[in-house]
Length: 271
Image (cartoon, rainbow, N blue to C red; front, side):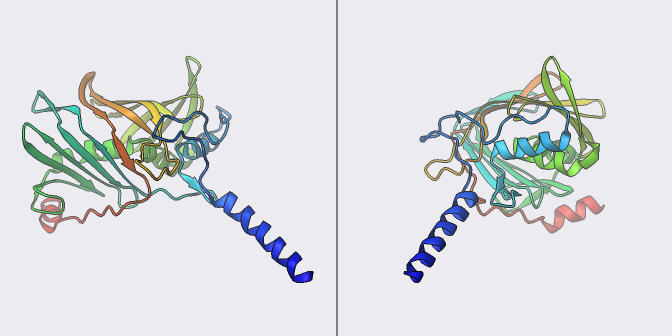
């Protein structure tokens, strides 16, 4: 009898642990937008609480310790537009690979039968002929690409948390607004009632980079991770639309994303 009771206690303890360790549930099957966030709205005057709620509702906090466990993601789409050399082109397919630990992003897209791969990692920017292949240094694009990485919703939450006491909260037209410095710019993000970004603006020098986000959901194909990303993303520079992407599917289970920095790119930056 004693052994049966011990086994029952052990089973109950294991069930409790797995319940707390599992991702918060809140999305519909099939990739439809979530119906309810994992937590309620945070107090709109406490930056740390707002940022924590932002991370939680995006699906970044996992386990009993509520650690930020999402470090790498990939996004795919089969349509979109991008301004290149002052000309608006249609993207037939695209893929964005992000490694937040390395502070790296690879944007691989095709238009008019031509493939382009734009890369940033740490303090280096370059273009590649193939992923990890021949590299052309693009130092002039560094800050813009760093900001594009930071202005992804997960990147924004991570950067806001890293800003610490420099993060500020205000209320504008009834909406919570989060402001913090990052990558040499001032980031201002307008949040919805669940503290998810719906619009963000980065001001650096005389340039203004603005991104809007719409229709949050878990867009993984099969294995839902309850990591919530906007399906539609629009980027403008100084008021002109330069990028318009619609996500078809994602992988938010920390896929293998590595962005080695080529020697010639490091050399060009040093020179």
